[in-house]
Amino acid sequence: MAHSAPSSPPDGVSPSELAELLDADLRRQAAGLERAVRRNPCVDAILDGAGTLGLPGWYLGAGCLTNTIWNVLHGFDPVTGVKDYDLVYFDHDDLTAEAERSVEARVQRRFADLGAQLDVTNEARVHLWYESRFGRALPPYRSTEHAISTWPTTASSIGVRRDAGGFRVCAPFGLRDLFAMVVRANKTVVTRAVYEAKVERWTTVWPRLTVVPWD
Image (cartoon, rainbow, N blue to C red; front, side, top):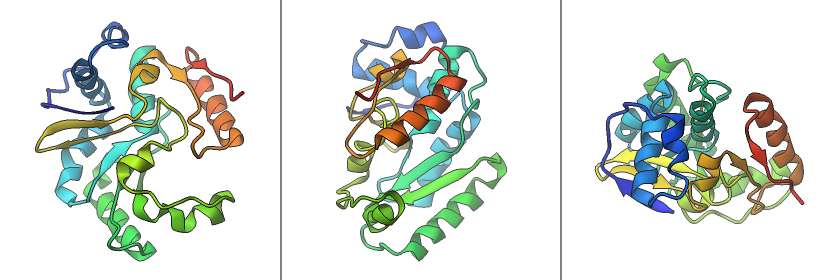
């Protein structure tokens, strides 16, 4: 799923409204997603400010969005359980660690007032360090969207950004599992151990999740 929609004001969305989006068309789902994630003030600020940094192919994605939606559906504060905010981009012209650190420093300065942990990754260079960290080789990603399609669960394989075209969503597995609070492994890259560790943490914070076992 990839969709763009004109940005709407962050006037919030109720749990019942999100539940009604399970089988809605992509435009309605994207609009509801934006209204919900913007209830998290850190997400709201990053969506409005990251575009000024000139990062190619950037998205805000993964757990910070998933967790925010589940907080809305549980009636929790939108920032509950959010460990960090993943800002990803794709710069294949400079694959050095130094360039990535420089970008991260710029991002940290830009959003220093949020008091939040931002994790900044150039998805074009992930294959250079992935094997040493996780013990298996990873082919180079072709784009940020390609990287998002390999993230650990279907509900967290999602990225959003706001640009001149409005609110843009990259969700290779759609949004149904996210809105239905279903945790399902995306086995493209993730290992069973990593998946089950996420399940353990997530179900402790969000007890209404439905977990699809690895096997």
